[in-house]
Amino acid sequence: MTDAGETPGQGPGSDVYCQSRRWRSACRSILGAGAVLIFTALAACAGSLELPAAKAGEHYLFGEVYQDIIEYHIDATQADALTLSGLKALAAIDPTVSIARSGDMVAVRRGDRVKSFAAPAPQDSAAWGALTGQAIDFARAQSALVAAVPPDQVDEQVIDGALATLDPFSRYVRPAAARERRAERDGFDGIGITIAFRQSQVWIASVQPDTPAAAAGLLADDRIVAVDGVSVKTLTADDLGRRLRGKPDTKVVLAIARRGEAEPLTVSVPRAHIVEPAVTLQIRDGIAWLKVTSFNQQTGSLAAELLQRAHRQEGAALRGIVLDLRDNPGGLLDQSIELASLFVARGPIASTIGRLPGSFQNFAAPEDHRAETLPVVVLVNGGSASASEIVASALQDSGRAVVIGTASYGKGTVQTVMRTSNDAELTVTWAQLITPLGYRLNHHGVVPNICTDSLIDMPASAAQLLQAASEAPDLATPRANLDDSGWTNLRAQCPPRRAERAIDAELAERLIDDPGLYHRALASVPIVAARAKEAHLQQ
Image 1 (cartoon, helix red, strand yellow):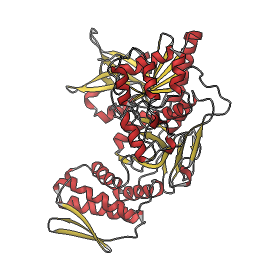
Image 2 (image 1 turned 90 degrees about the horizontal axis):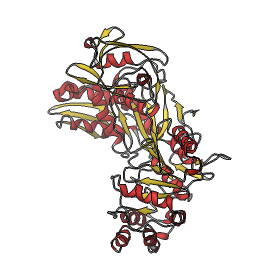
Image 3 (image 1 turned 180 degrees about the horizontal axis):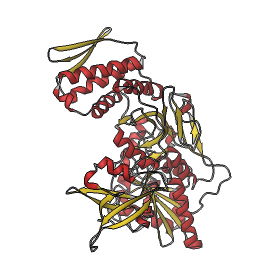
Image 4 (image 1 turned 60 degrees about the vertical axis):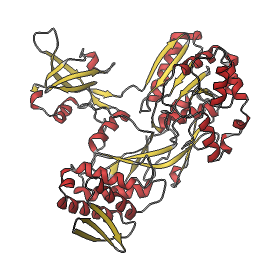
């Protein structure tokens, strides 16, 4: 990990941390189209940074957020524009609250009550942050609807309103949800269970494999009666979470009620740092199938470990690798580079460009490393985004893999995640991604070598698909030379779809079974959906 001063993104293949002028915060290059957050009472970010005492109230929070947006966002903006856009979002809570600027004055109105503020200099983030807080205070005093909303939700509403003028992927996440997001990316210090609350009782909903909880014999549907001798009936959900969490190698003692047991069981469970596995392996008929669901801090190393396991288990019988990136929304930038490097022996993997000097970076496979040499097929669909698209485009552009499926999501931007003084997270878009062949991933995405969008069943001959590709000369233009209209047409011929269709895997297996067909596919252009459909109907 690299301490990068105040400029995000100083070194390829590294997580990015920065030291702010005002407070210590973690800044990390991250990519993703979005993720579903699963609540677990023990999902706390491990190795959390020590934050200094937060300066008072929302006024400071807004000022720091505005400053970070101004410093890091890919598009230049000013604090006054962010403030006015953010405060207008209060109307979503109470439509009678309005904000307007006239010359050097900013007025907040509800009904016949108006409060006016002198407008600070456009770039004065601290002053505009203070004005935002004062305007919200006035709105709370005048509106029962605004007053009834918890402060952290109002903060989120206003900050997201400010970000809405910029791009769809910059966002603010409240402290509780931010802790869950950090746990997904970085892991958490706990025992490895997910809990559920039913009828005022606490149950173990699931036990993660290869965790202290699994080793201690805890089971799904066990009921937690007490934690360290304290009845769960006296604990809130937050209290319970804090008691289950703790430093690695410390222990928590649970009283467990289990069906078939007359008395509660006493189970002592050591805590550990736990990262949700983002890669799974199946080996079928000499093919290693790697399913990658996200890019957290261990995706690259886990994929390498599983590939080594496949080689040990199969030896010379291992014939190929299928990398399934369908519905993978993305994650950490460095992990996408690490995963792609497992298959690319040399050369570029991706680059980034933006407004800031630090956003111009080139990422390449490490020199003199050993990459996989077996045939590789990559599966993508409309849910494959960002980090997934980096991997798929790098393998496709280098001629290292055949890409099968439908066009990917098309989110080719990099976000920097900053931890704010209230323990929330601000995600700011600061760069665009460029593939090895030089085209932008944003909006364009990855168009497969073989498009399965129009295929209903497995064709009798996969070779007919490649023949259909060769009959589409208009698609032979290098993608780096396509303008936006050309890309729109290209994606329209293989539109993004979210389904994980069996035909993708069937075709991948058929290509690996036929080395000649596989190498022809490497050199093919993307198939026109209509021509693929014609090839299927002609059989």
